[in-house]
Amino acid sequence: MSRRTLLSAGAAALFAATLASACATSKDPMLGHKVLDATVVDRRYDPPGTGGASYRGSGNYYLVFEAREGDATARYTYQVTQSQYQRFQEGANVRIILVDSNLRDIRKVD
Image (cartoon, rainbow, N blue to C red):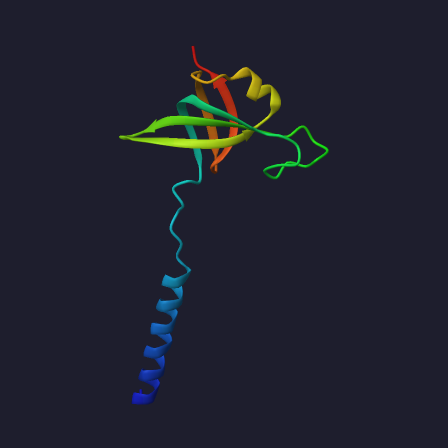
């Protein structure tokens, strides 16, 4: 083999290795399924026409949860339905189910 062929093969291998490492992705820790025991610490309501709520709708309802994750305390704010907003008062102990950082379900914990 000539020296030129070896250099071309080496450059091609280096390019392929660089491309492969650039394509590798790390998994986002927020993706996936989480079940957390939490406490409702705040309830927020945006009336129609404010905070992104349309003028024709009934407004936007939010619940704020505090949950322990290991040694840390995390605070989550999620938009909820009007019935969920009315059902879960501040101080309620709940179990929240998150899928890819989206709230899927809220259940009262006795």
